[in-house]
Amino acid sequence: MKICNGLRPKIPFHTPKSITRMIMRCWDARVTYRSTFVELYNELKDYYQDYKKNKDSEIVIQIKKAEEFSPSTNTIAITTSLDYKTHPQAIYTNRLLNFSSLPEPKNDENFEKELINWFFFSDLNFY
Image 1: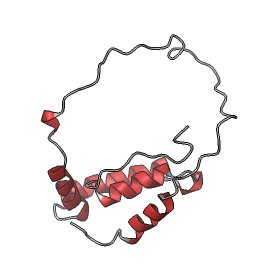
Image 2: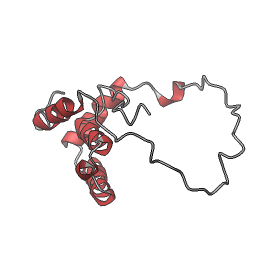
Image 3: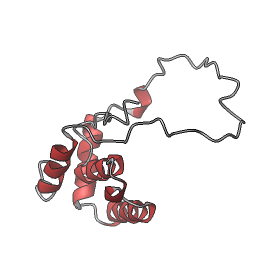
Image 4: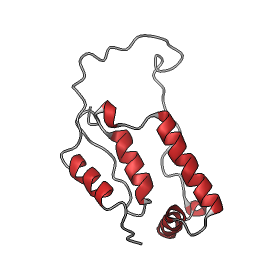
């Protein structure tokens, strides 16, 4: 229910700007503002090709900066128990779900402001 009321996870500050913009578009409560699969695929493909071919591109610089802030993947430890109890009807059961009682999805109060800021500052390089 919190997601329907606009709650979104915090995006780490070191996440590349272009990736942050992509994530925020995907989270938009207005379906028409969200990226399509093809748009996401093309954007990610462009980032990947740029990353492989142009070591001085903006996305490469942003990824390198993000890696400096990110903890090493070798030091990540699992701190939660992997002993989960599964509800007997949670898997292997095909049934229709009733979503009629869910509220209309909405964006967080600050979502619009953050989205505008990301687009406004997208051409500026803060790194």
